[in-house]
Amino acid sequence: MTQPVLAARVRKSKGKGAAKKLRQNNQIPAIFYGPNTDPIMLTVDYPELENMLKQGMGENIILDLEVRSEQGTETRKAILKDLQVAPVDDTFVHADFYEISMDKEITVDIQIRLMNTPVGVTNGGILQHIRRELTVSCLPDKLIDSLDLDVSGLDIGDSLHIRDIELPEGITSTEEAHQTVAVVAAPTVKLEEGEEEELEEKAEEEAKEEAAEPEGENP
Image (cartoon, rainbow, N blue to C red):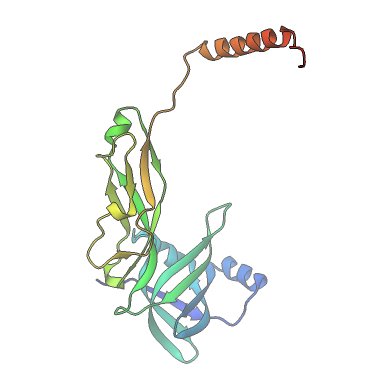
C-alpha cells in the first residue's frame, strides 16, 4: 500500500515566539524522533498536513516524511504519533512524527466503534461504551483504522470484554483480557408522576410521628 508523502523542513528556531511566527506563515512546528534517531525539529505546511488528514486515513497515519535540510532531502518512514489541536478553534498546533520500520512491530491505540443496536437496548436497557480505544501491537502494514464491533447480540446484563474481540490476523492486544469494552445495563426505574411526592410526604409524616412519640424511661 502506498503511503502519503509529506514534506518537512529542519528548523533551528524554537520557543513560543518562533512557533507563533510559523503559524502566522501557515506552517506548524513539528518534531521527528525514534528509537534510533535523535529528535529533529521540523516545520510542515499546514495545508499539506490538513489535506492528508482529510483523506480519511484514520488517526494512525503511516507516511513518507521528506526531511529537507541544508544537506539535502532524506525520506523517512514515520507514523503521525500525536497531533495537538487548539481547544478554541480546532486548528493544528504541533505534530509529532515517530520513525518506524516496516519489518518491526509498533504499538498504537486503535479506536473502538460499536456497531448495530443491542437486543438489550430494544428491551429497554442502556448501552454503556466503557473503552473507546484498544492498545495493540502489529507490523505497520497490518495496522487498521478502527475496530468495528457488532454488539447486536448483547442483552440486558451482557458485557463485551477484550477477550471476546476477534482481532484481525497479525494484530495482538497488549491489554488485560478481562477488561470491559461495553455493557448493556438494566434500565433505571423511574417513578410515575406524583409517586415521588407521595413518598416524600409519607416520609415526612413518619418522621413527625416518630418525633411526637414519648421517649422511653431509662432503665
